[in-house]
Amino acid sequence: MEKRRADVPPLKKIAYDASVVGEGNWWDEEQTTTILQKKIDAIFAQIEEYKRVAEHAESEKLRIERVKVDELLSLLENVHPDKVNSEMPEIIKKEILNCQQHMQTISQLRKRASQAKEVTVQPQPEATPAIDASEISEHINRIDSLESKVLHMASRLPPNYTKLVKALEQENKDLSLSIKVLTEKIEEFIKKDAESYREKEKAEKRIEEIFQASSKKESELLAEKERICTEKDILQKRVNELYLALETLNSTIVEQTRDLENVSENRVECANQCHIRIKELENKEIDRLEEVAFLVRKYIDTGKKNDLLLEEITELKHQIKYSAPQIISIPEESNNHKEIIKSLQEELHQLKVDVERGKMDYLERKSSANYHKRKSVQHEAELSAARKAASDLAEVNKHLQSRLHESEKSKKLSSQRDIELYQGMIRCSLCSTNIKNVALKRCMHLMCRACIDERMASRQKTCPLCGTTCTPNDIVSVYL
Image (cartoon, rainbow, N blue to C red; front, side, top):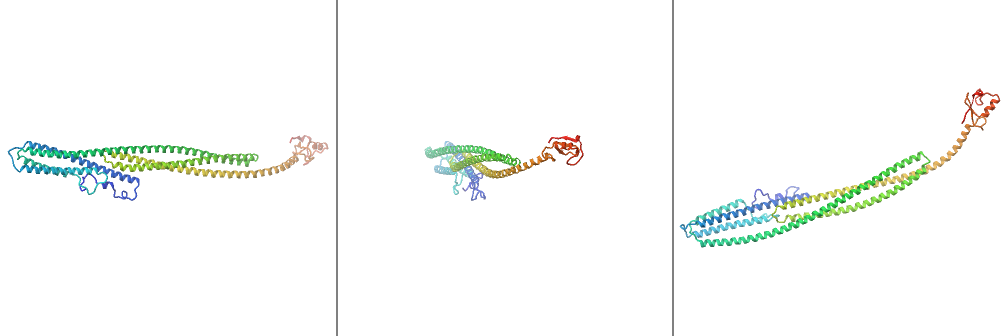
């Protein structure tokens, strides 16, 4: 348009940004939503301005019509018959025609304003100029000057009621035609308003359905998330129990190895217990692997369900995105458009936040699954190490059993020698048959009672081993 009001900013400057962010080749969703919001705000601001201009023009037109009709009626009532001129009726007709032309120009301007008001999305760059207050004031001044001339000329004319009646009838016809046109326009406008209201109701129903579907999907996602969290906690508890069982197994294996090293009699029993414990742990590990496989399958199923839910959310998002411009294009005169668009944008933002939360939950579940997978691999490695240690312990047990048999054989031989040595130590060194049961106080040598009695009977009062003199009082009985 050629002329604009100062408080109405141009649409292109608001809708499009000349910076790199506004006119870039690649826009993300936030930038597109901000640009669309700017366009919508500019369109609604321009619509409101057109409404105000049209209402002001309508009120000015009605005011001018009322004032001029009242003045003409008062003029016709106050005409004096003394001032008569033959040329005055022609001049009055010309002035009335000029007034009608000015009224037609005002109606054309009003139509242009209404057409400009109806244009909402794509304003024409080469359209007719908008109504300005200066133009209205110029037309009013011209009409005032023409009517002053009419009053001046009519003051000189006698009353010609037939011509006035004809003129009034013609004006009445024109007014009736204009009223018909206006009624047709009003009916069209009412029809458009009803259609727009129906479209608005349909859009609201569609938005409510989308909102209900999104809320339902969100509740399903939350329930699925809670279920996965509970399964994750259960799996973590089972893994911790298995880890504790492995630690207890390692501690028991270490204790049993120490017991095998220290106590040679319990080695066979420890080996049997180790084998039984290893079998139990193998059974537990098989059960745990089955549980892990079941949980992995369930996690894969939940991931697929999550992907399906994300696809449905993206479809709902696209539906809302495509339904937004349709809702914007509905020509309405109420101020509920901005509220509807804001609510749609809030719902879009909420859906976007829900999608991001779903992605974060999916990544968390994926990381937890990888963590549990690594833990299971680690536990499998520990279990294989435990099995290897058990096999090593079995080999060590076999080696220890062989050494035990050898040591038992050697112990039997050494015990026989010890018995012979002990018997030689407790037997009398003189006769080598009797047990030592007498000791001499002087030299503390041991011998049997028979040998010392024979020695004393033969009056040999010396020790047979060292030759120390002794008496019968030096002989003392001992018990070995």
